[in-house]
Length: 507
Image (cartoon, rainbow, N blue to C red; front, top):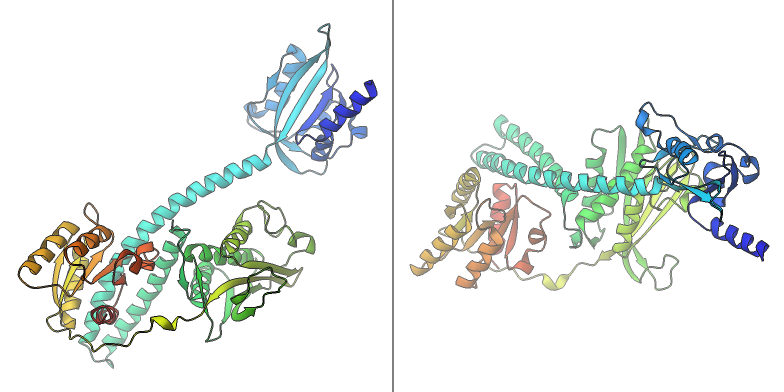
């Protein structure tokens, strides 16, 4: 019976996920379970009868109040009372690996209350610390995302003023003049700034579930160039002209591209080259990828970095998996999760010294010809009335100039209540605005969505454009579902404004 009890207890101890040590009254090791042996890299035979601190070696600190583990160990031997370390310590294993641990010390007595020794329970604190750090990083990223979103929105307002005035100035210049060429170069610079704000908004987007039709080649190119900005890495793109679109969340798929490119950069510390390609592929019902039958876009992102050993490949998407190549983070685990959410799949192939290739399969969208409508005769611009609502005075001024230049009659207000009021007044005088442009974000006033809803109650046939510098706003990406007739994304040129107005007028 005694033997059975000893065996049973040992089985229980070896199945615990914590380190367990039994010490004699002087602090020598009598027993340690399997987890303790694995963590310290000491076998029971080699550790038995050794002093606890000779096996359980704690990294010394210059801060005196951090010697919690040995303080507790000494205290339990002297006072014969339980001790719980208030702070984790750094355990140094046999091979020099450092592991964060938290220890509890419990005195053991027999039936006659005689002190027999100590029971020590040590918990590996590393994983908990990783999750705490990941949570803190997530909170910091969330704060950074909100800040980036606000900056990008305000920056787009500034760009709208600059781009609008430049495009107006070009209308009155000879296309062969030096001034026209200088303004052209200024516009190109603004286009690059506009692309950068788009990446900031994609990064900051809180809309993680809304999906839209995406031009995957454009997303790959923009996100890659943004991520590689300032690095010594070159990138070559190859996309066929007939590459299909995909349906997905712009922010999430942008994060996938970003994380993979960061991984590639880390694998090429002295520089290198990345090749990105995409092509259409038809997946049959029976396939090894466990994908549903249908049209897919296959994306390949290949670097010529240091590569990974085969032993890493099956774990590379595991959270916090540690390797020389990946470090210890959630980057590739996030990639895997996002691709799974998009009902796709991701594969990795790597050769040490030659590089790594990520292959992504995403469901593709065939062109919808059912929505192609016969174009009506154009409604003339002359005398067409446009009502503009924007809380930025400088935006109202430049937009009014652009509309006037195009032949429209422009009226401007700074918030929703004024927009509703003037719209009613015009209707009562048997006049009507042909198009209304509403900024979605109005500081201290009624925004575009609420204003549009009130306008449609007054006039169900009102044609309303949603305008915003938040290009990832779900209203902008899915405007029809919210009752808008179109979306005007800041910043924009005179020609871009003209085109969208004509499209709306001819609906």
